[in-house]
Picture (tube, rainbow, N blue to C red):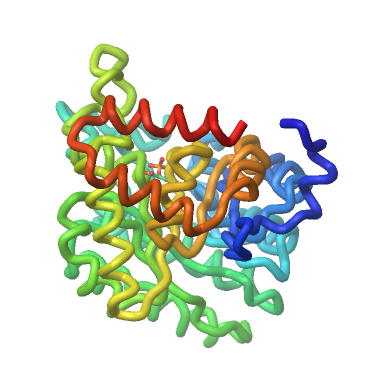
Length: 324
Ligand code: PEP
Ligand code: MG
């Protein structure tokens, strides 16, 4: 980076032709907050609520959760904070809630667990709602949705949590609710899902894993794990077009959004915000400021015509070199 972090922080994430690309951060620990703010994030696109559960020795109670969520919401206020409901299972284990399965990534994880244990979901939803009182910058995000029934059940629970909290005297509005698009089935029901919610967020880590049938953590098949695979790019483009087709904003919060070259493509696809690790934010911002949206669109057009991921990697590398 030829530009100091400090100087970059106060500059907008804007292309040469004036397109503003909101850069958000992913958080989990309270320690992430200061770093995110230092780097000029415009919101939190993904707060991984399982993180405080993983560092605990038992399920945190409602009050305890509310205090943790309040810290995040208050620290970023008035910027929006997107809190994902508990996404355990897969590779994210709780010592006090052991799950033994042959295929954990295809098993009991995310929304599947919390819909089977509505008491866990309700406690968490009430804690988030109570924490948001007077701040009103909460957004709730549902992980691992594979179809409408799960979404509708989760929405029923959210409504119930909301009326309970109001009955207790908390003056909170129902926050915007969103769905993660991270299971291939959800890609093909983007429109149906989007119509029922306020926003979407693509989880490209899981979407890549499930589209390519490659375990995201298995080193033996790591070379096959590629978010620039033509099928992944086609899926992402389709999600953006379908979400916008029904008038809903769509963000992306997988690691891909923090890869500067990939971020150029995501911006060109039309993502409304990119959410990433605070560490990557300055690099992404720096690169997006070096080119125009028109150039990014042209690059995306060429890349969507490529049939091999190797060709995509080569063209992106060339482009990065040209941009310095
Ligand atoms: C994803 O799947 O891309 C995502 C952001 O969620 P996680 O990495 O927590 O599964
Ligand atoms: Mg995921």
